[in-house]
Length: 278
Image 1 (cartoon, rainbow, N blue to C red):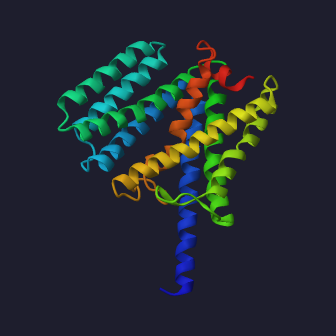
Image 2 (tube, rainbow, N blue to C red):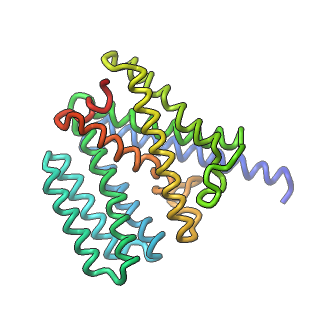
Image 3 (cartoon, one colour):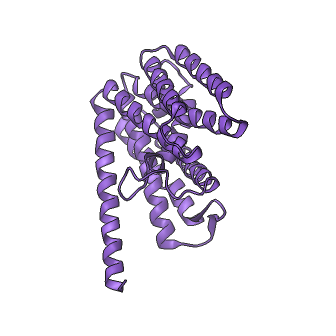
């Protein structure tokens, strides 16, 4: 391949990656802003795709009965949370985990299947719960998206432009300390922007919350990289042009959503307010 051809191919890859990211962002923001029910539908579809990719990655057989059970379980949990009955949803989750353990072929297979169930279910419950807040639900979800996307973009850009020492070469050879620090610190600006918009929140405090969520994003990215390396995979699928799989795109968001849900426990009656107002 000539140098010109290589550059042209790289440019096409960048254009494809950006186009996919913009389309996904528009879909996610539109569903989150439109209503809790459109967001619930989006999350349920996304959870089904993640369950399929997890099965493809860890079991090598994609949408099998375990993935089907996981999808149905996460959907039931999401619906229960949306209707204000989370206890029922977590009962279904516990029953599904017990079923997977009882019918699984061996201990490693059972363990990875249950880990995948939790990996999908807990972020879904947190996201749906945050969006269910009538006053600030949409703002909280958009804020969380903004932190995750800023962390991902800043980490990618700084890692490629600045390079430097590797963060965890055995897990993800491309990740650098410069990328990690940029991805952790720049989302503080998102906190400042949202605090300014809300007017009733402390900008320094929400900036610190944003840094905490951004660190969770970075750790979530590393966690997924470790699982992929454990199973010898580069991507979880090829569903998203230029990005790989759905899980490759939302790995950081999943762990950040769990942390956001834990922060929102400050006031369970108003989860979005608990996350945003300091």
